[in-house]
Length: 252
Image (cartoon, rainbow, N blue to C red; front, side):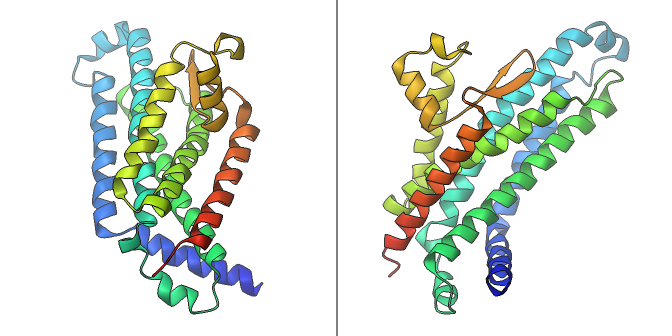
């Protein structure tokens, strides 16, 4: 019970640092981009009869723009959040925590949980905006299971690339290593474009899919090639690597 309460206090402390003024402004700016993109994707300025006549095309455009923008912007954001959280200049408060009977493993694990919770909250806000704008601007938008599945899988994908950035940041101590993780994500997306079955993949694509599971969207349905269990195993493995790297890190 004592350890549980200590963990909760550590998570609250980490969340306080994640919600810095700079990060709040950044996340607010990204949310504003989503709002503008969603509204324009629905052709909100067009007359209602025109939108009703083209509802099939607009629905497809709205969904495709959402998928592309959420994949790109949230992956870039989560790489930034995980990277900056473990950057030396933003990790100085470890001195007070580790000197107060908190182990390095607990400190780093609760920080991972804190950043992940912030990311989940951010995705929940984006998904809420997507559904709310669709319901308000149109009279045909329907909230279905596929939307919820997509955003749920994006949580797993985002945390995978966030943890990769975390590992690189601990080793290299540079904020720009997030671009490496994001670059791997982009390469992964390009190589699997139009590929939905294992049999259609070359060895490189197959390896990337094993190491870095991505969300695949086909006909509005979101899936992961090897399933959610595989993604969770990858996350657990990356968390272990983070803990080992942080325990061996020179905090001086």
